[in-house]
Image 1 (tube, rainbow, N blue to C red):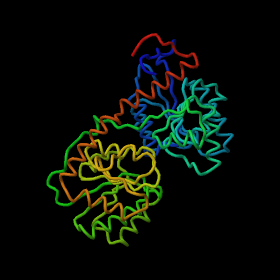
Image 2: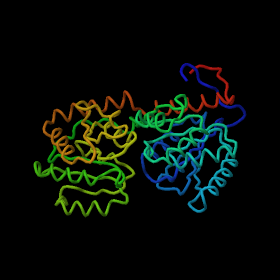
Image 3: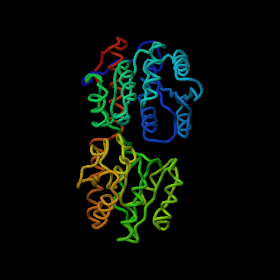
Image 4: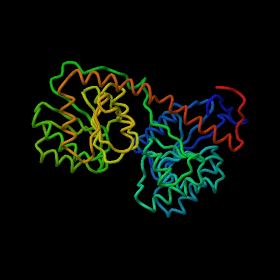
Length: 383
């Protein structure tokens, strides 16, 4: 995929039709990746269409504003019926590439694409996808057998694909998630700090483990009563977390901000970014925070260690350990020079390794390579 760039398919305008298949368009890292791939594609080469296996969501409006059609299969019917319905949709859309995201769309999409005669199936594995559940592993393996390429967003996810799901090495590619560095600009340390402020941006869900984060905040507030935390996001755990905040006596210190379509103002008010997950791929929210110059304190799970360089851009701590999380938070806030140094290093790391333009280019190269193997493109001109 280096050195040459394939020409588009002949006789179509735009030439290469790509359909992204997701579960829904509820806000989340996976869905944002799809939005970015669609938004930043080369429009003279690739058209885009999004199909939801279940329902739409809040990102549907943004896709529509980009002129990208969205349709939903719906939640009714058995799995075989939904596969047949998806196959009918694919026959009508006639994509050259079906790009699936995470396990359920992968399995449905792999079988429907075979029925509909879709030439190429590319799948993105956005996390570990339950490697300890044998049924999940078996279905992932079946879907991968029907796929042309499986893209893992982290080394950790790629390792699961190769070693647990036993997907052939030649099918597995690593493409880290990326962030738009023109949108998330470096801003430097926050001036006139009246209190040390932290922010976390994540779905309020047990897998993000904000319960441990609140316990850590209690420990920090005991030593620094001026500490403040903004929790940006919504989800099924919100009521329980708000009750826990009150039980811990943190009502004055922790603010629940709900879902926000634009997180930049919240990042701009913070000195550090926190993430307490027990499982992750490459979290976009962490990349966005680092892009604006926030050091990160995050749990050492999934692909996070591929983003944070301990002692350089932030700290890694064990999952489910409020004591370790609090200790790292206190270590960063003890020295303003550490905040500035780590913030600059965070921005530089994003620019060097996690720029969105490079991510989109890698995916498009994979599309063209897979089509080339199917004899659907010519390689006549160099990039």
